[in-house]
Image (tube, rainbow, N blue to C red; front, side, top):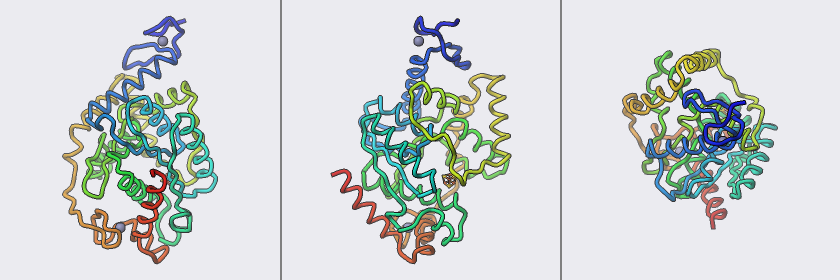
Length: 315
Ligand code: SF4
Ligand code: ZN
Ligand code: ZN
């Protein structure tokens, strides 16, 4: 039996890159400290900031919320219910359980309440793939909630393995401009709230252990539309083998990338969407184009509905 590096309890896991055997309790505090130092290292937030926490029902956002709840921050957990069959119903239940377990209040934004239809119908009417519509809708809704809730940043639960996998994929496919979006944070600008990734240096396996040791509720099945390509699976396998041979290399890669992501930024010409007024790279933002095509209405109606909801919830 091996003892924990910090106490006399039996160790539950070995963290290779830190060369430490840890019991459950000390593993949780090791990850909490790592997340707190990630916030500081990348200058993600200021003390007492109000942060929107995007939770999905999955284990990564559950770990992020649970860990950040231990720091002096004003957290606003938000769940976007896009109406994806049983997946959304179950995810919503889990988010409610998690948030009440942590003694917080959850804001739920339902796509059906906003536009009268769920994701699958919206995508069909807009003639676009589900995941592409889902990504656009989520980005837009989170930004509008963040604007009206006057938060400083939006925290996303993307972890180290997914980020490095996407960086390698962008290099292999030469979509270099995508790398600019894979750093630890983006800055805010007028009408667009910046994002932070508190799990930037936390591996997927660490998230799993943290969620298990902390008894966090999370969904154990994936979205029915989820599809991970063979290339991503092979890259992930490759970086995990690299980590086995060179413990700590994933974190080193993430730190190198954090210094260089801005070099991959393409010159974006921002304008205001003619429909909703928010920043857009074209005359009409992609959200408003989807809504117009699917419902015939303007995206600004959705914006107004969210504004009313947020004023109501926060008053
Ligand atoms: Fe959205 Fe599901 Fe696609 Fe993920 S897999 S982007 S949740 S539709
Ligand atoms: Zn211990
Ligand atoms: Zn718009």
